[in-house]
Length: 434
Image (cartoon, rainbow, N blue to C red; front, side):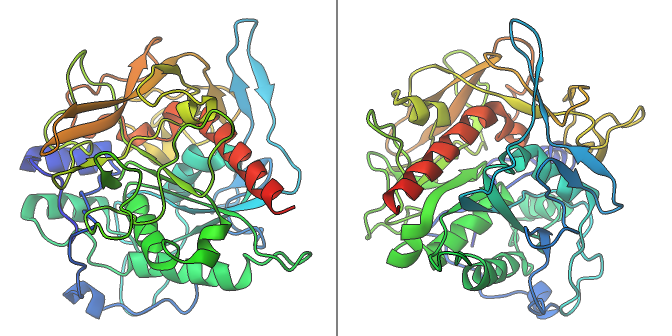
């Protein structure tokens, strides 16, 4: 059973879930899976997957240059790049993407979706689910076909309750919905209609979505030669991917490791690695310190650590613990449909303390505003491992005392370099099969 966030007080748990959002209880690979609950008895498998984004369905959210909300309103996917010589507007690429992206969004629902969760009633797209998808992976729309399933996730209040009581944090059918969507994608969409060959795929998740993708990878990819061959990369942010203290994967006989055969992406001087895992939780800890007790940086089992992969370090072949200049991209108020009363729009309930840019594009890129490095403190028994962020321009609020740290913007803090890394991984994957 996945473990709740350790050492969270009742007040902190409730505040974290309802005010900061995206809370994810720690999930050790060695924990025994739940064998069902009363909540599951009330539900049934969906008749078919329900998609937040699907390239063959224009009614879903993800377009090429604009994205679509459920009421039909569109927002731009362009980016304002803040440069020394002045701001420059970049438009997303429109060429045919060479690979696919399969993305699972984080904990964002305040109410169950559907509100009455009985039988196989399907979820429907809401503004907050679309807004968080766009904030995290919208800049990737020109690089991959995006497949993003809706799933009957555990809600923010449910997550707060599980942290308070120690109850099963994921009692519903959400992870089964994600697996069903993956199986549908693998059977019907992963085979290229022109070449007849399977396409490369990048799997991405955050928070509860990362836990879902971890389970999917464990079930359908790790140790499966055909599926592993199609894996370009897996991005699992804001979860707790655990690896041996001095290894990149479990090696086949380590049940405490999240993955046995899928390694972390490690910097290579000659080329970017493919078929590997990018994982971290971001914090702005005090100088010489570590994230507060109860953080996502704390290891779950002796002899192991939580994975930290700095995308910029992998991209440049730099040591993981070296300070690198990051490429932050924040969503604008326009992207999340902000207005005078609620500038953070559909993400108001999770972006407490954040001031979003007001550009007329969907995103603002601020090269050089942040730097980061993978940090480690502790010993083999008890340790912390995280992406340490240094904010040089006041881009982010102070979260140094928060057990969640910069959890909400895990993707945003280095989205530009992550995008470049994924593009280069896709190019290398495709070149190896040409």
